[in-house]
Image 1 (cartoon, rainbow over the protein chains, first blue to last red):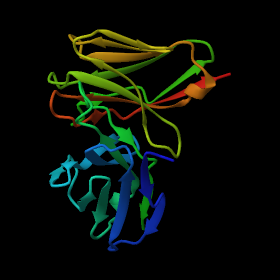
Image 2: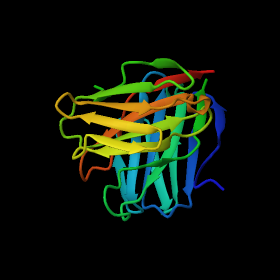
Image 3: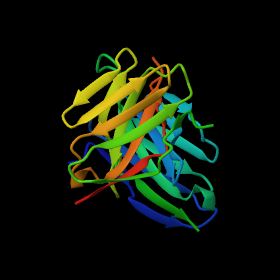
Image 4: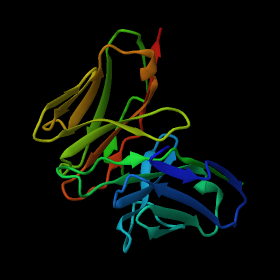
Length: 116
Length: 112
């Protein structure tokens, strides 16, 4: 089974709708991240969480919110979706307790979101 | 402004030859660098990393070189295999920050 799972894998929605993307991990990592990927721009950080009580904005947090329901679960919400939020969304995890440099992140398979 | 740049969007190489992927960065505080590989419909997977205290790190067919003075790193794949056809992302981070800044990616195609 995959260590980092994302649901749904694909979603088509309409402008103005509320959308939630979910991420679960079985790696036991404490840190979780949400990214979006747009063509030609690489991955941009939306939000990150270093533990259940810690939520931080990334580079492009406007229009998004997150919830860390448990160490293993981190969800991303679009309160009112707009077409320029059409993108590929990735969840990632990392382990701050692994020892040494712990920058390495492990990614889920992604959610392709289309906002019409 | 992008702090990590991969200026070649694509690279085509013959099977068995060397693939060289380049990455430049602007933030002098970056001290840890990673390469990720991504296949279609999958998430990026970690490939290899290097700390700024080194100038080379090797793992099997993959070698990463770091030139701190030029703020440049490269990934060498020798020999290239068809399964290496993928998008490769360069990423960088600062000490105690744990946030990764990514380049836009280079699509590698290995021709038989």
